Image (cartoon, rainbow, N blue to C red):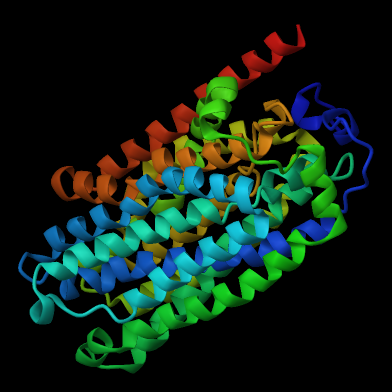
Length: 439
């Protein structure tokens, strides 16, 4: 087994200045439920951005333009997320973690369920566009408040030699959320006429998302009152700080952390949202079959996430992330050819892409969290997460579809390659920061 001198593989007892026992297994349960809920919300909206909103909200333009407009509103949540973090960190400091989680998940649930009642452009006119944009911003602000700090903390408080395994547990929420969302939409698309689906069928997944949010709220609140959680808060590991103070103290590390998983997050949308839009717009294939392909491939991604934990514990998280970025760079060269290769090509593309995504995404959480001072780790990790999603994923479907529709599918491969290069540079820069700190 390879032993790395990186701080990513330091004994957790040397990372933390306290002697309280932490039970990663208990943390993992709450994190997994919360992340699965968030990602289910995410994918329900993402799928609707392709198969519903262009027709419901933008019927006055052609399907391609309507989808681009829809992806523009999709990105608003990622722009709003850092502002949500700032707002809910203040609530956390003034009123406690429970008040923060309740208010954030209430806003998320309300924004999500109101989308389910969204009228059409034909009945409300241009106001429906502003309404959808406002609700999407509400979701983004709420996501900033749902950050509980447990995902990166789980990686750095795990038993020695098991950090990669525990780091991947929260990431299982993404494929689980996608599988359920894809299966739900495939069921309604396959069972209803186009008119019925566009009228009322698409609304049911949003109701399900609201119900899952309620379950996730109780799971997180249960976690927030455990003695282990309170000890972590009192020791500083989960203590919120002012965003301005955190940026001044940890700004360089936050920026590096935002770009470190860029290849992963670029691939994330290149394999989940963009392919569905391409198939829906430029092929005669019905979205039902592709959604089923996506659900099957997401199951492969789930297995790959689990594998990433074992591999990372053997070769180190940094090595795995760097190797994954190189593999994504290579994949970007022939991925467009597969996506344009009919049902067989699409299936191969999705399975390969999700396998790569699972390996890299499984270890993308809190990759530089150990570099942050314990006092700022909670808030700095939240900001890092916000910016990583904004830079790596927020505009990915819009940019990929815009480039591909004008320059061909090869342009989407170039976009993916740029994300891989950014990751390699960020990992290199982070390594230099660690060596400088050690020296």
